[in-house]
Image (cartoon, rainbow over all chains, first blue to last red):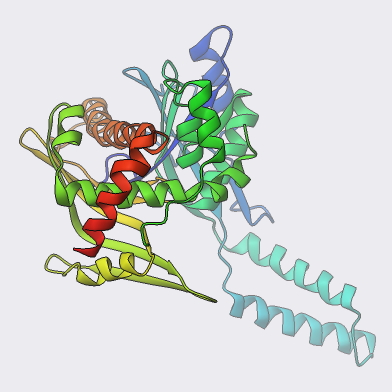
Length: 204
Length: 174
């Protein structure tokens, strides 16, 4: 779901850490170095990288700015080749039969079967284009706040890993505990109470 | 700070209690939350609620959906010790309306529909449209954060056990 869609989902993060110098250049460099690379002609099943918000299929952080107002706006692109299980099964069975005929044996070892399966997946990966999934990101650096426009667990995990690798900053997902923990208005006494709190029973 | 994955599970009940409290406030008297959230005209439960009830050896989920759905079953689930795990809201500010869903355990916002924005007719319009959308999403994000902070202060105060919980219990039975 894109930023300009009629309906969006938002996962909120607090960004921990600071970029010491040349903020925009450093962020652009992090985006550039970790931008998405095409895997359509590679024996790779999945990849993730940054893409520009305005042109996610041809990301080019050299020419396209990701600064809009007070925000950095860009996208996480996850490309995955979805090879149907039935296609894998078909070519796996054919390859197994070929190997058995060639070797004159009746059975293959577990390792041989594993190798055949990997080989089949690699070959099919070269023939099937990857499906791109694009998730927009709005990062307000001054407020140490980042919105990721997806609630999907796997996409959030990819974001957290790639963000840390690209900018050397840590993302803390905001959920009931972390929202209370980062509430600067709470005193030490309040935090002590919070740490020992247990669920309320609304029934007698 | 606790390990994040441990803290997520350990404290997800706070998110469920937050949604239960919000439903109570919206149903009984929302003057307090309107006062502390400037520009808010109203906050109402929209057309979806999900509750979870942990029984002896199983978990029962109750989903109530639809514009004309009755909430009796949801109240019965609360009477049996259930908790609200998801709630759909309609939020009005000025002449505008937002609709969104909140999941208690994560406080993630989903299915957020903000007021209509101007049409993008040329490339130069994109930047303005993005800023407008960010402004509109920020309204909901701020609202959720303000309400949750309000809840947390209440939750760790004596007022929670002495005043709020007895009132919620009475409301559940009503």
